[in-house]
Amino acid sequence: LGENLEVLALTEHRLAVAQSDDDKFEIFCDAMVLAEAYGEDKPEALVYATRALFLAPWHDEVERELLRLAESTNALAEASQTLDTIIKTREGLTDNEEWPVRMRVSLGKLLLDHLDAAGRAFDSFEKAYADAPELRDAATGLLRSAAARNRFPVVIDVLIRWQSETGAL
Image (cartoon, rainbow, N blue to C red; front, top):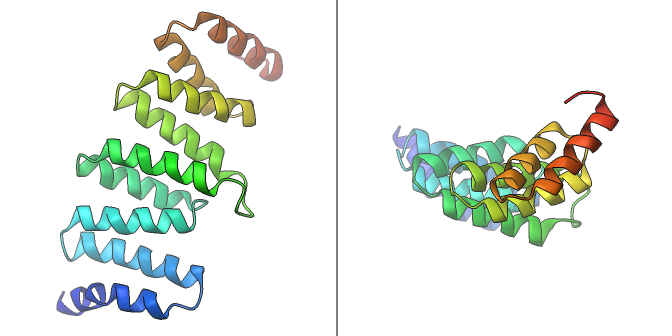
């Protein structure tokens, strides 16, 4: 226990000498685990998850950890802002271009299911669906958020498009 907390205490020093973003990402992930498991400090673990995700948004396992930690610390509104900011500032700057759709779907679910923000959820799902109409979660999220906002023409369009492209409803 003591050794793990000592490693956690050295996190910022380790980051200062890290040679690459990959090294920094690993340090953030280690610190996230250590803060929660040994320091019993979920808010601190959430900070490290946030920093790791900003650095490497294509790592969906870190995104899931961030959302789990945000829920357990009642920081879902902050998590929604984090995801939104990452999308706005990092999209197009990475080699992996699949993560923005996945993150928009996660953001939309968070907004619609936990934060009662159907309008923002609609915007997130609409962009995810525009970029990946074959993705079931994007389509169902757009349907749910459009229905919540009484945007029934969108619901009909999505249902018709989904049925014509997949043959299923």
